[in-house]
Amino acid sequence: MKAPLTSSIFTVTIPSHQRMVLLQIYLLHLNMRGRQREHIHTTYKRASSRDRLNAQDREDGLGGNPSHVQIELGKGSGNPPWIRSLPHVIVAALASFLFGYHLGVVNGTLESISLDLSFHGDTMAEGLVVSTCLGGAFIGSTVSGWIADGIGRRRAFQLCAIPLIIGAAISATSDGLGGMLFGRFLVGTAMGVSPTVAALYITEVSPAFVRGTYGSFTQIATCLGLIASFFIGIPAKDVPRWWRICFWVSTVPAALLALLMEFCAESPHWLLKRGRSAEAEAEFAKLLGGLHVKSSMAELSKSDRGDEVDGVKLSELLYGRHFRVVFIGSALLALQQLSGINAVFYFSSTVFKSAGVPSDIANMSVGVVNLSGSIVAMILMDKLGRKDLLLGSFMGMAMSMAMQAVAGSTLVSGSSMVHLSVGGVLLFVLSFSMGVGPVPGLLLSEIFPNRIRAKAMAICMAIHWVINFFVGLLFLRMLEQLGPLILYTVFASFCFVGFFFVRNNVVETKGKTLQEIEMALLPAYCAFLLDSTSRLLVYRLQQIKI
Image (cartoon, rainbow, N blue to C red; front, side, top):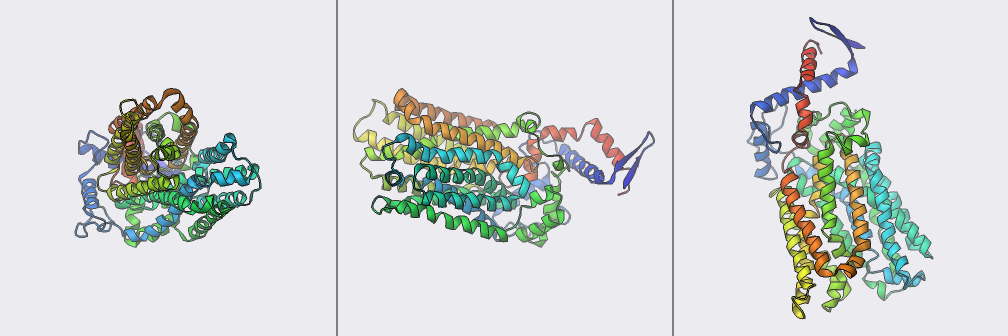
C-alpha cells in the first residue's frame, strides 16, 4: 500500500513502510529545532531545560526524586527501580568472571602443566600456551559485533559458553601440547567475544542513572575471576595433576551462564533495531517496570531512524560521520594497553621476587589491589563521572610508572629501589583499576550509536587484542635492549598522552541516556536534519494524514 504525498508543486507516492521513517525524521527535526532555541554551542551540554532537570534528578540519588514530575508525556516520575535489572547484569558478569579466570589459570599452573605434558624448559611452548589464548581472542573479537547483532545479546552469551566448556574440557584432558593449545585457542575465541557482548548487554539493559555502577561489574567480575584462578591454582605445585581440576572448575560458571541467560531479558535496543517493537516493550517492562515502558520506547525511537535494516558497512566505521567516535574508542583502548598494564600484570611476580615476596603472595596482592580499586570505581562511576575517573587514573598510572623508572635507574639502590618497585607496581594497578580498567568498555558502549554499536566495539576490541599481544610478546626483549629507565619512561609517556587525549576528546556520559549521547556526538547528522532537503521532507510529511 502506498500513500500519496501531494503539494502545490508536484505529487510524490511513497511506500507505506517508509512513512514511519519520515515521521521519525520529522520528530527529530522538531527536537533539533527546540535544541537550537536554547543556544547551546557545545555538543557536551544538555539540549533543553527538561534534559538538565532529568540529569539533576539522576544525580540526586539512586531512587531519584519522586516529587519531580517529568514534563514529557507518558513519562513516569523518578527513576526506574534499579533492582529489576540487577539480576540480568549479574548473570552477564559471569562472562567477565570467566574472562578473568582463563587469563590467570595458567599463571600458577604453567610449571605443572609443562612437567606433565613433557615440554618443561621449552620457553617457546610455554609462551604458546599463553599466547594461543590471546590469538583466539583476537579472532573472536573481530566477529563479536556481527555475532551480537546477528543472533542477539542473549544467544551470543550462550554461544560463548560452548567453546568455554569444550575448550576447558579439552585442556583438562589433554595428554600433549597439541591438545592444550587447541583447548586454549577455543577458550580464547570465546574470550574475544564475551567482553564486547557483556559491555553491550549491560549498557543496554541498565537504567541511565546506574549504568556506570553496573558497567563496573564487568571489571569487578574480571578481578574476581583472576583471584579465583590464583587461589584455586595454589595446590598445583604440591598436588599432582591438580592443574586439570583448575580447568574443570571453569566449566561450572560457563554452564551457569548458558542456563541462566535463558531466563534473562534480551536487549530492547537490539529488538527494536530488528523491528520487534512489541518484544522490546515487553523486555523494557521486565527491566524497568511498566510505568517506564512508553517513555523508554519514545527515547529509544529518537535514534532509531529506520536505516538499521541496511546493515553497517566497514567503510562507515573507518571514515565518514562515524569516524570520530570509532577513533576515540580505538585510541582509548590502544592507550590502555600502551600504558604497560599487561606488562605489569604478566611480569609483576619478577618485581616481587626481587623483594623476597613469594609469587603466590605477589599474585594475590595484585589481585586484591585490582579488586579494591574496581570497587572504588563502581562507587564513583555515577558520582564523579567517566571522564574524571579516566583523567585521575591516567595521571596516577603515569606517576606510578615514573616511580618504576626511577627504581630501574642508577639514582637509587638497595632497599629504596625495592620499595619503589613494589610500591610502583601496586600503585599502578590501583590507579588502573579505578579508571582506565573499567571505564573504556563502558564508555565505548555508551558513545557508539545503536546502529553501529556492536560492530564498532568489535573493531576497537580487535585493536585492543593486537596491542595486548605485542606488548606481552616484546616486553622482556625491550626491557633487555632499552633498560628499565627508558622503557618505563615510554610507558609513562603514553599515560600522559592518555590524560591529554581524554581531556580533549572524551565526552562525559554520566546520567545521560544513550540517545542523548548519540545526539551529542553526531552533530553532522543533526545538521543534516536542518538542511534544505530535510526541510522539504518535513514539509511533504505535513501533507500526509497518518
